[in-house]
Image 1: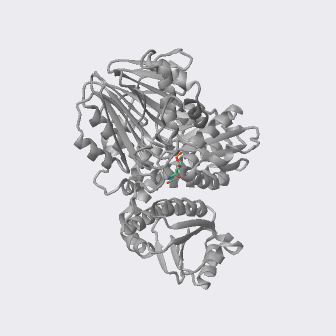
Image 2: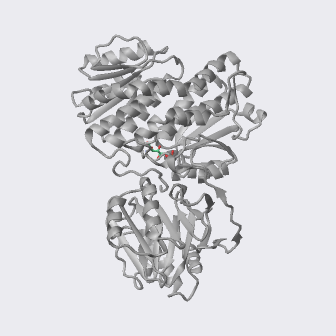
Length: 608
Ligand code: M6R
């Protein structure tokens, strides 16, 4: 949430800052700003409300040849989106950009109000004023002032600070909000996400919580808040430029949907032994005995990651028969006084690896001595670094705010983890083999679906785009897909879409059915198909507009029906989900909304 960039070197700082902010725009996009300094420290501060393009236009009219600067793209927490509230914030000679939330900002603000005239409503300006009060016009080193200030702060932050009194250094610090330093030849970069560094350098140093870095063009000096020196761990960024570009598609969302055959193949690479019907996951780091002892699995995630966990839980309980599974929503679980039984393992699911609620659960669960396994996409992210073991899903950068390819791979990675538990517990090969075979076939099945369904679903999406409300229905493994499908539709098309288990209709949702709604019903050809059809009949009898998605032979007077062709029997819901993703995409195109950056949302939710 929010993006930070920084540059110091011998090239044009504005160019890197604007380019970097564009890459990070998915993290927040209600306002943006940069400040650069010339070699004598003369600052140029530019801010704009709205998207980075607005800021870029201002920069084009105020071009500078400055070699140092910091920038920010904002997702508002304190104060409305406006130029005044946009970062960087200034206090004296200090400029600051900040991700996170300073919880005790009111208390600090009242203490500082005699020495600083606050102009914004932000917690960030309070931190700038606090740093400035310790800096005392350059009497103390900037890094010391930052450390003194941070010692008084409660909350989360990733910050970058520069002073007009010294244009040859910038200071960065983190607690709960990621920052990565890019090491160049005679230049150093800073960003809240490595994607801003791609094409500039492959060498990265990820800051840890409680670390403060003093950065010049040629040197990076990292210390803890207690002044202990930290030796820099330089890692290699593997992602290349093509992975973060649209590659000929109109939007990242459709690119990421279409990428799923390949991204899932990456998740599976080297992990399936079809000949011996075995799953081989190295990352969880659990011995056969530890796997055998597992009696309880907690799956923790938010939004789409939670839905992936829900889907996986339905499958895992089919073959790991003495194991109980609880998928939990991280923002709820972190404040519950849940009892975690002995022999539990927790799957921590996150595309970004930075989601604040999920990270808080990880820390809490770990502190109780429970083994934590990450199901994470972003390599080197905080969750990936803090879990005891894990399985990267390897889907590559997911840029669109609506998560798509991550869902498919998260669900399958968790199902594979469930299979390894079942294998260790001695489950019959005949029980597991059909699942393993279908997992192996899934990339090709998704590929086949993507050849035909986009063309079929587009006119249907155009038909349903006029509705304000939608009910998504599914049962068993199709219920988590209904939840995920409804989330996708609501977050990008703003249609009020909610999911219910088909069997729950008579317990309340049936009362909603009227001509303001359409009902999207998932009907996999499984042991519950007839029961699901009965539920649909009840909706039809009340004048409902049914849009049925099925792979079975059904005879329903639905408003429309989309039939999927597939050889799969067990994993068809994963295909249904791809159909729902396409549906949400084309509805949103029909309504003319911003597909990749829906209003009020950001990609990575690093604040509570
Ligand atoms: O990065 P994470 O997987 O932890 O993110 C979790 C949710 O914030 C995310 O899935 C969100 O719900 C998406 N916008 C859904 O499309």
